[in-house]
Image 1 (cartoon, rainbow, N blue to C red):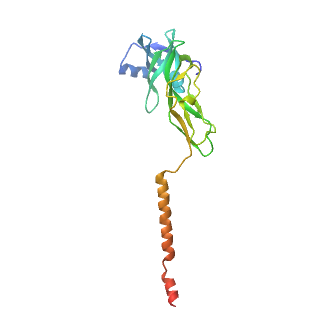
Image 2: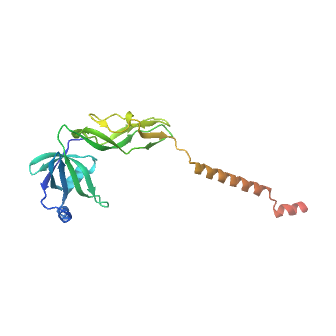
Image 3: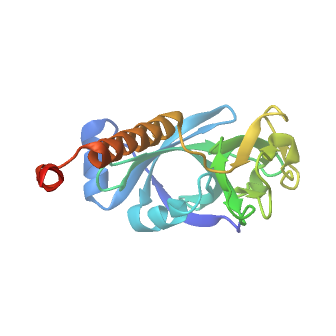
Length: 217
């Protein structure tokens, strides 16, 4: 992960839904900072800068400048408007340099498996414990040239530096296979073929009126 972004935060003295709406109307995002035994701090953050800081990172580590005092913080819960996707509220946890945190990191598949095969991603995220200042943006799984039947398991994935993966090493992550028609498709094809054969046989054996007249003549 790149160096963390610094955001200027101001303390909020009003709470509740009405106060949160007024904060958002002022172009700010309401947030709460807690953890390490500290009293929760109610904050307001600049909307645009905060949106950009959280746009591409599932686990954003930020430096919050709270009235002149810097504090490392990890975005734990980001609530967004379901339609506009604007940020409605953020829960931050206090982070100390050198400590480890447990977070969910998205999986990303790179490369192409063998010709004629497809891959199926069994897990979307992995839970990892990692130094707070080195949270990876994603865990990469490479499938270049893998053949039909190959299974990439958790234990096959290179562990990010300084991290441990909190999952069963035998759990399947990616499965490589050749696309196969379903049983229903095969049955439908067979039924259609049989119906076509029967129609063709009936059509060839039934004499026409014209042919019967020709025989009588």
